[in-house]
Amino acid sequence: MIRVSDLKDKTLGRLNPKRDKYERELKLEIIAEQIKQLREEKNLTQEQLGELIGVQRAQVSKLENSTTNITLGTIIKVFDALGAQLSFQNT
Image (cartoon, rainbow, N blue to C red; front, side):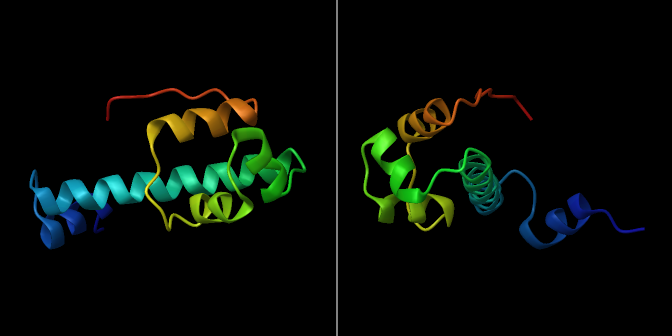
């Protein structure tokens, strides 16, 4: 059986800038998916969420689609507005 971690090691290497960039982007995609899921669970439109955090609907769309740089401050605002708890774990 081939493990995903072994494939990543083979294609990206270990402990290098390329691997670090990949891992960061992957985590941002997961956060973006969580934002969309939470927003939909709260029956909010992108426009309504935008109003809660002080941005336009287009910015919320970009956040949910991982097409923009997102700051930690924005992530915290979004999760607060959605009533979700944000925790950081060392992996």
